[in-house]
Image 1 (cartoon, helix red, strand yellow):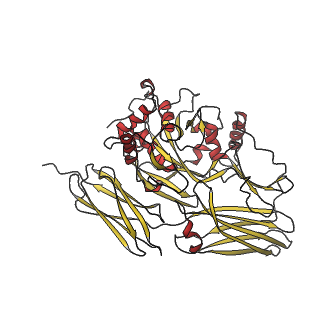
Image 2: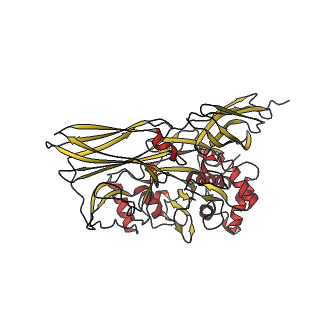
Image 3: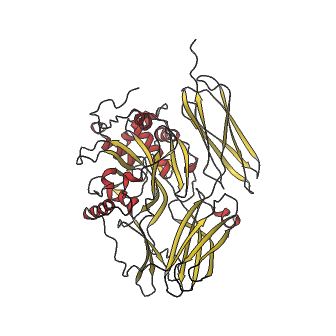
Amino acid sequence: LSLNSDAEDAVYLDDEKEKEEYVLNDIGVIFYGDFNDIKSRSWSYGQFEDGILDACLYVMDKAQMDLSGRGNPIKVSRVGSAMVNAKDDEGVLVGSWDNVYAYGVPPSAWTGSVDILLEYQSTKNPVRYGQCWVFAGVFNTFLRCLGIPARVVTNYFSAHDNDANLQMDIFLEEDGNVNSKLTKDSVWNYHCWNEAWMTRPDLPVGFGGWQAVDSTPQENSDGMYRCGPASVQAIKHGHICFQFDAPFVFAEVNSDLIYITAKKDGTHVVETIDTTHIGKLIVTKEVGGDGIKDITDTYKFQEGQEEERLALETALMYGAKKPINTDGILKPRSDVTMNFEVENAVLGRDFKLTITFQNNSPSRYTLSAYLSGNIVFYTGVSKTEFKKETFEVTLEPLSLKKEEVLIRAGEYMGQLLEQAYLHFFVTARVNETKDVLAKQKSTVLTIPQLVIKVRGARMVGSDMVVTVEFTNPLKETLRNVWIHLDGPGVLKPRRKMFREIQPNSTVQWEEVCRPWVSGHRKLIASMTSDALRHVYGELDLQIQRRPSA
């Protein structure tokens, strides 16, 4: 099969391996989790499955897209970024981030795009529910199905800058607690979007190639919830004047994280500025394998380089808002530093958090410290505080001291959300100098996996038995359990319900299938229940051709 063979084509790729990956590969890997604990899951794009091309054409029909524009990847990707979400145009997917998924499928249950697109075409109604990686997975299917090279990208510590001033403001009370009323910006633990490969004849030479496109409904663009295509090269160099939506993407990867004390007299004091937190790591799947590829340097120069400063100055010149005046000046660096580490945490078990204080001066200091543990959505929005602890620390001259805090499973288990994220915020005030130290970290609880096994001939046209197995490691019964199974070229998407799974008990589900595509294939499974979600499993297969008679 030969694709994009004409060098004059707007989506021409000259690397054969990249064509195979970004157009022909019907299974991908999406990265999620946390910068300190990166996780991955396979996703079935299924762009060659029966009915998917018709479904993608229906998406453009639904958008009333002119036939004359359907050969233009700029227009197709912009229409797609609006239509994959249902926010304002009855598009493909309804987004939900409130952990309530009545009358729909939880985002973590989907194993791929096929069921979603086929349901959308058959019912003519938006499908419930999606979050950023689901939007990105479906959008990737749409683009690849139409012959546009595409990949899913994950940005760790992604800024959602509500006032587009390249500044994420975390406001603190004078006692060190976070002021939730003043803190409007949010930092997503990760955010997934897409890149599509195309020429940009509407932009100056050099800004073609990978374009950022995002179908997760975050901000309004020209009257609709959509984003892109924005030239990745233009974003890197700060040329955010070029369409479409480059300022928003620039802010997602380049904002500063600023801690500000809001004093009772109405003044603000900037305590610390973290210029490296946002856009910490930007990744995608490697070509020809399931590993991770770091593409951070395609979006931004390294912090501190002259080019990085010039890119920021260019962005400001082209319309990015300057940071607000915070009424105060940045305090000089404190003699005391603070950091903390979170132990690898397994769902249902206790774990420790260690806070380290270091005194770099010949003076003796006392500190009043505060720790807050919160159940959070992966978007950084807090649901509830489950842990609150205050303690006093005495630091002798030129000394280091560690404080350990035990986090018990009973404190967090009853309130977990979709992705089992815990967020910890530690502040400490040096009583003698009134300096405030602030640090925050998230952790993702390790969740048990599904086990997939097969028996029988792994051959096109031959029956093969697939077994999905799960053992409940928790001390509570899991109820309303759904297991989803998918495998492009091996079996059609299917699912099964188990009313409950008792603690420490195992369930098995067997399905018979008959593969119809040879070569490297993959089986993907997911499980959701009332108390536990984001449970995955996968199995790589090599399917043999059927011997000729």
